[in-house]
Length: 314
Ligand code: BDR
Ligand code: CA
Image (tube, rainbow, N blue to C red):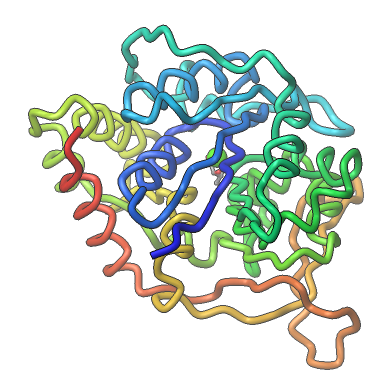
């Protein structure tokens, strides 16, 4: 079977770490070309350090890690340290490694990686942080478009938000960048809070991971436990693992329902800044390049995650 080539753009981040782990566990179907980092959950230095260590820890040291944007396009960066802890990975400390971050800038490195794909081959972009790098990539290297099969991102929501009433973190952090990406015309799947908020792991899963002899499973268990103890999840039965939904969708789109909808990002300075405005009217203008996921078989996703994370030799 031909593997789908993916590039992960991320800000690890607990759920980013799960997304990377899931991709690493599914290398029979996915080829991870590389990882670029973007400031979001934590500073660019911190998330890059986490990505660097994670690749070695997960047994994928050959996957290049390149450092991208240090702040959003227009506004100053506001981290989500209150959700992911001061390290970005909760209380978890990953082992040191000799693995190095590539010396080139992440956006340039990503452009070169795409442009050097053999004739007729394409990659899928999987952005799971603010869209700063991807917007800069499209603006600086428009020629990469033909090497991109599609974008499957975590961000936004058809209804509601998690930072403000209508703003989801990744989009709210850099709405101008998100608007560039959403209006790019490249086929885009939006894994927003409508589905990611329903896909999570609970205290039983955390316990099972923590009790494992595998250092990777233990670390993942520590990260879920950190989430579950945070004020956002203390009174909830499970913690959402938003970013891992992107990888899951690529492998099992049949577990999801979506609709092609025209989406605009609110870039105003008003209270809806960062909202993904989904136009459900059939008469809406535009050519609907965005597939907004609206429903998911969440239990199957949860089972799949545990099967992959506990069934991998690491
Ligand atoms: C998104 O925000 C970040 O905190 C997570 O890593 C995820 O990408 C969820 O809103
Ligand atoms: Ca993220």
